[in-house]
Length: 548
Image (tube, rainbow, N blue to C red):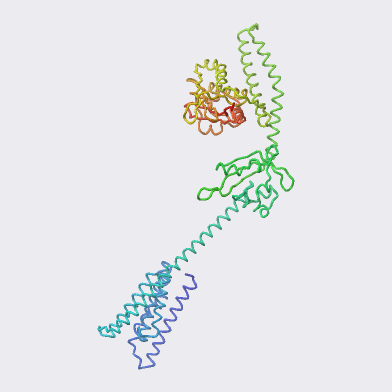
C-alpha cells in the first residue's frame, strides 16, 4: 500500500465519520421528532472508525499492513449494514451495494470475502426471522433463497476472479523479478566482458557472432555492431603457421563442438582491419542448452605476437648454439675417449678424472642433440622415413643394448609379446608389423627404458606389446618410485622435471619425454602414463599397424 493511499484512508475515514456523527447529533437536537435509538449503533460504529484511524491504525499498519486493511474493511462493512438497515434492510434500494462489498472483500482476501458474505446471509435470515416472528412463509423462504443464491453466485464469481487476478499479479511480479535479475545479470556480464583484456566472442549454432567485446574490437578493428551477425570466419580469417585457412581446414570451434571439450590453439594468426598481422592464442569451448545439446560456442583469444617473436628468437638462438657447440663437443668426446683408452699410459687417479670428464661431455652432447631435436620438431623440419617393420624385433634389439645397464643395478629387464587380438579372438597368420620411422621409435624405446632404469632402485622392468585391429600398443612398466597425479599432468611438457628429492639425484634436462611424445604423435600414435606415487609407472604408446 502506498503512503498516499494509507493517509487518504485514515483522513477521509476520520473526517467522514466525524461529519456524519455531527450531522446526526445536530439533527437530533434540532428536530425533536427524530428517534435517536436506531442511529445509536451507527454512531458507535462511526466512533469506532474515527478512534481506530486516529489512534491505533498507524501502529497496526507498521506491524501488519494486511491486518490494517482488514480492520478498515470490517468496520466499513458494519457501517454499510447499519446504513442499509436504517433505510429498509434487505428490501432497501441500497441493498445491492452489499454485492459490491462482497466482490471488493473477495478481491482483497478470500477469507475476508467469506466473512462478509456470511454476515450478509445471516443478516438476511435474521431480518426475515424478525419480520415473520419466526414463522417463515413460502414467500419469505423464496426471498431468502433468492438473496442467498445471489450472495453465493457473487461470492463464487468474486472468488474465482480474485484467485485469477492474484495469480496473474504473482506471475507478473515473478516476471518483473526475472526481468530485473536478467537485466542485472546482463549488466554484470557486459561489465565483465568490457573489462576483460582478452578478446571474447560468442557464436551461435551457425557460427555467426552474437557477442563481440571491446578487447576483440581493439584487436580486430571490427566494431561489435558490424561483427555481430557475420560468420566468424569472415571477421577473424584465421591462418595457421603454414599460412593455411584455419576456418576451412580445421576450425577449432567445430572441433570443440564435435569433441565436447575445450580446445586451445597457439598457432593461429590473422590480419586485422589495420593491415597488422597478429599472432593469437585462442581457447574455444562449447555452449550447451539445458538438454546438453550444443547451441553455440565461446572463444577467448589474446595477442601473443611479441611473445611469439621472443620464442622464435630464443629457438633460433638455441638451434644456432646447439649446432655451433655440437662440433667441438664431438671432438672433445673423441679426444677424451682416446686419452683414456686401454693403451693409454695413465695412473688410476687420472683415469678416474677422465672418466668423469667423458661422462659430462657425453651428457652435454645428449643435451645439444635434444635441443636440436626440439628445434627441428617445432620448426616442422624433422624428417620421417616411415617403413613397415616388426615392433617386437625392434624392442628385442633395444633391450639387448639396454640390458647391461639394468644388470648393473640388478634389475630384471624382460619382454613379453601377446598375440594379435580382434574383439577378444586370436587372429592367426595376421601381420604384426607397424608403420613408422624405425629410428625415431628406437629413440623412444631407448628413452623410456633408460628412464625406467634410472628411476627404479630394485625390482624389474617389463616391456610388452599388444595388438588390436588398428594399433600396436607398447607398454614399458617398472617398479620404480612412481609419479604423482599432479606431475603426470605436466610430464610431457618441455623442460618439465618432477620436483622430488629422489629425481634430483638422477638429474636430467626435462626434454626427453617432450621429444618422445612428439615423435610418437608424428608417427600417428599417442602416449600416456599410468602411475601412482611409490607404486611404479607404466608408459604406454600406440603405433598404427601396417596395412602390408
